[in-house]
Length: 182
Ligand SMILES: [Zn+2]
Image: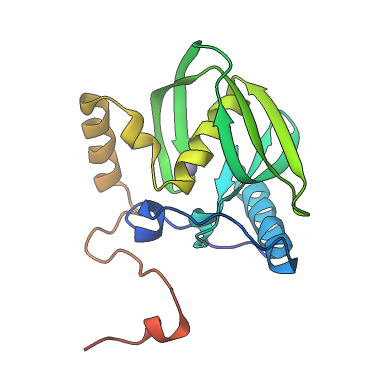
């Protein structure tokens, strides 16, 4: 198990739609372990594979002392109830903004062996499932804000010490992609 570096806002991998998992193999199990270990190390509520640079539809969660993960998640909303409260993201450190989400969610997906699993959550668990599934579609919580809140959050991001707009980190696609292209 290895703690992986977290990709930060500005990294194109966070804006890329992740691919469904088709092989439930040992590489997937290693990814799930890395995600879980990195999440526990960082102390967030959830972490999606693109946040550690892997474009696959997997996320891990640590909510209300329940640690788990979901592969190929699909969300269903059993009712219309909403919640509003502060939301943050490990890829956007230090920025927390009230974000509207659905209050209740039923998440269907798979475990590491490809067996179907179902996760029923409300409150923070529901918020986490929505936030992490958004990551798999290249969506950040900033996109869920109204214009005014988003502008304020972007200002905070641009002033953050970790934000380097001039040199966003490159996406590593293959070993060859690391070479400078002319
Ligand atoms: Zn996030």
